[in-house]
Figure 1: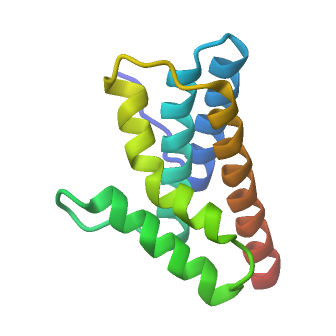
Figure 2: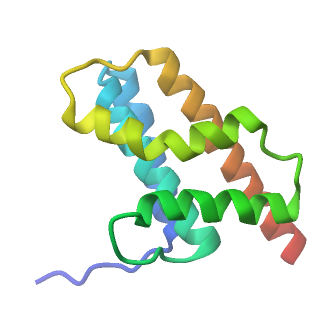
Length: 129
């Protein structure tokens, strides 16, 4: 029986991000969006901690991330990016459960947001060093 290696949520986010890129390169956009969402969620947990239990844990985690980023730099996220982040759980649900193909352009928009939050983490870590 193999022992699983423990990783951080940041490492997990990076692995999920790479998986999203691989899926998008192969044209599996809905699956790429789902994987990108979970990369983003892992980033959120890395930044603000695990969410409360219950129905609203995904939405609450997104809001808590926005508040945390705003407390550090009110101008880091645009109003549009904040709205997109709040809607990310809905998009992931549509990607996983609905019978519609989400356009690649939408994936690229969210990809930029996730990249931006990775940059935020890097700035935070540099500040703490």
